[in-house]
Length: 105
Image (cartoon, rainbow, N blue to C red; front, side, top):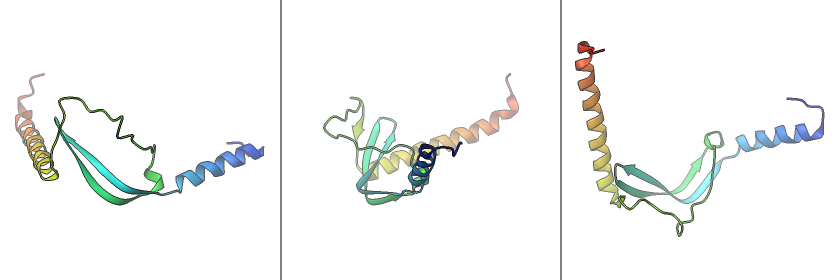
């Protein structure tokens, strides 16, 4: 990067200040999606380190559209679905490991 002009200095310090800025979100929620089920889990006040932020924006809840097949469920139900999906994935991985010796290629 060239430091010849004042614009270059301004851009580099501006970029550095964005990387060091933390984001504080009030009333934040996390949308968990498992298959066709989803749940918005409230997080409350949430602090995000600036180095982890790539893009930030606000959702317009009036314009937000979900596919018609998505079903909103309770946090307890989404946890059960997430656990079942994780167990299923682990079982598939274990079965794949056991069948690796067959090497059908």
